[in-house]
Amino acid sequence: MSLKSQPVTLLDMQRWFSADRMDTYVRSAQATDCDAIDLYVWNGRISKALLEDIAHVEVLLRNFISVRLAKACGHDDWYKDDERFRFNSSRTRRFENSITEIEQQIRHAGKQVTPGRVIADMSLGSWCFLLSSRLEQTVWKSLRDPANGGMPNYQPRKRAIFESHVKMMRDLRNRLSHQEHIVLDAFADENRYLDEQYANLDWIARSIDPKAADWIRSQSRVPLLRSLRPSNA
View: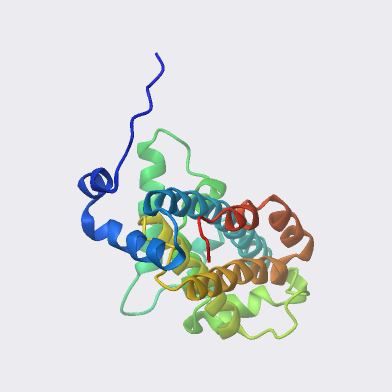
């Protein structure tokens, strides 16, 4: 059965999604002389396109880290090697607890616990943690060690710079996953923000593998969707 299209008004959108939420789109639409509903739809589409790119970069990142740490310690379940990498401090065993929780969830789903499944379920926050200053002499040292594969495409070799870029990706993903808006009141600010976020994803991927970065960029829907943004600005 086909659904008949019915006219939707801004009042409908405010009733369905709240006036507070729609205010952002109303202000931005007024600034760029376009329709707030069209802008709301576009925001959802470009958000999903950015999440696609983030997914590619996140998996690239976790595979890069996982391969090198496994090589460093000689086993695939490197996340259990606290003696070598010192994931857990004397005050907290947060990393160990997160791994235990992941393993419990895998068992609860009726699946066998394997390193691949555990690594796939680790959050982006966990990968950020592995890049933190506290683990610079263990994890970061292992990541840039040529014997483990090294970081030939990241010549600065500065942990803090690399971490800041990954944190920026994490913050964007969190924002998009919580359905926050990409559109901004000022069109120039919005363009600048999207330029920075898109460039950041490319920077991370390129620092790991330029060929992978080229492929991710070639698959991205973000440039096309940006060109289709409702605007007469």
